[in-house]
Image (cartoon, rainbow, N blue to C red; front, side, top):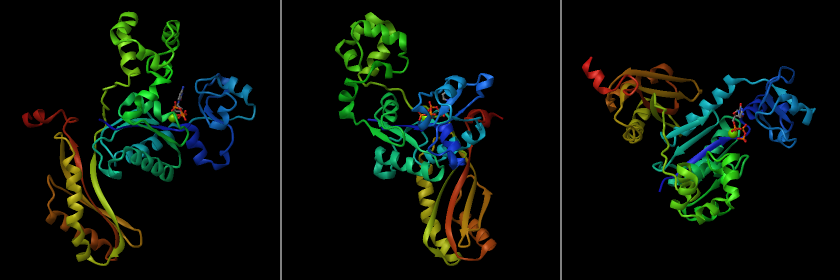
Length: 351
Ligand code: DCP
Ligand code: MG
């Protein structure tokens, strides 16, 4: 049984605007094009949604519905930056990340050992970290497959999460409108409604064979999802550039020997993380990060294809020489070549 999390930020562009200008908090705002220039709304804050303002609506219509609406032009670079920061948090839990848009992604956390392996706790921790370090809220759906996780992330929006355990799938789907199924738009929904099908539960009343006969091959897709069956994998196109571990120590490390003492356990947890990498990664550098107790920090790196304790001890000594005061944080890591990007291993050997 897989554990899939679907994350979706709450009124994403608007949330970034409110974060960067707290005076906007609690007010009806929207991000979008100028009403005079036939602009459209990209998104609206929840306060603005109370007036019926929605994505893709003409800005002129939005202004009519809510004359005090504060309309803000978009800042794509800020949204991209927030999206990147969210992604960086996801990578602490899994490499199987499939972004659907800037503010939305599937995570397959089936093999994640953090948070006692509980997807519910992982989602909660991710949401907390995003809110604390990025300053926006996201909602999450947790389920055994993508379809259910995506539906679930909408259930307790904003700033909430919803879990569908395997045992709850049937009752969850019983009352779920077929419109919630991907690809079922107005037209299909109307066709289904004609034969009395309104919910996924209604679809289940039909056998698969009968359903396909009546609705064609798309019927098979609908029937499977309505029964809670969705085997589509989380497809990650994202590739790592580096992998690292670090630790902030409860008591500062007083001197170089104290730092060197901590290296073996850091290397061990780095090794554990590297075991999960696929064969298409190749190490090209190793690095060591040191943060001193005055909060200054330094990183030293060296070309290596497989760093040993001796190699990292040397880096540690170099880093220490740059500060020579107690150390609060130590980190070790490697930078990676992605062989799938350089044309694959075979080609490398043939050159
Ligand atoms: N977006 C857009 N045009 C649309 C829909 C969305 O430009 N027609 C942009 C603005 C949104 C972002 O994409 O902030 C994310 O889209 P969502 O559908 O996830 O909507 P929000 O995150 O804004 O709101 P919600 O809280 O409902 O997820
Ligand atoms: Mg969103």
